[in-house]
Image (cartoon, rainbow, N blue to C red; front, side, top):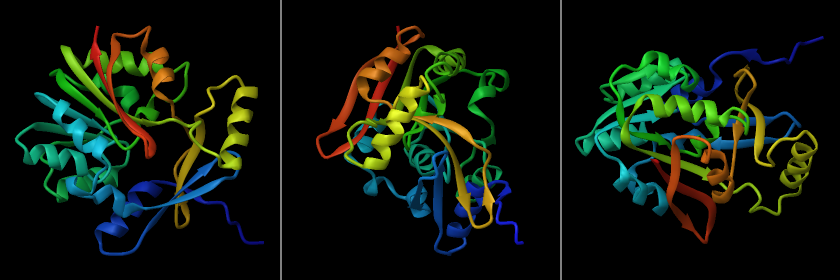
Length: 246
């Protein structure tokens, strides 16, 4: 019998590498209930003019030294670097970091958000969690710890620019059923247990979190951060929040 179990590895980075080499590549996100969603990884290479109005507007809130968490292929880091900012991009994908460097990002590091306060010396003025990467806080219980680590590597008046999605702004039956499953497990509805797949490879399973603006405010309330502005659209469940230190 053939073993169709995927190999554990840098599936995300392999998909980026394929696109960077001129190939057509899809990133598959697999949820722990078996749901699969596919994204053309060309998204991670888009130019500023192709971004949503919310993301374009959010860039005006970046100041000083910038940390781009989960930088992927470097689309946001490279844009801000071109505008004259000192930007450091970090990602858990070695191949993503290599692509960022190949594309001209001067500072790109292999680094997990969970280890950030052990590895950063000079504080940042702005932190970016773009591409819905507020989700990297993981779960409701993990969020205060991750947000605390970001607070420790930033200046006293730093800004956190975080993109997320309101998970309940959907009529997709598969998503609504998963929300109910999460509630039964004592988790927030927008919590995902997921992994990325590409070809014969899959990343390890990890937690990711989608939250609406009010839930985000509740999550950050016990931390050093406060949501001071949200940039929303009536046409999309995605939004960008600007957080500042209290």
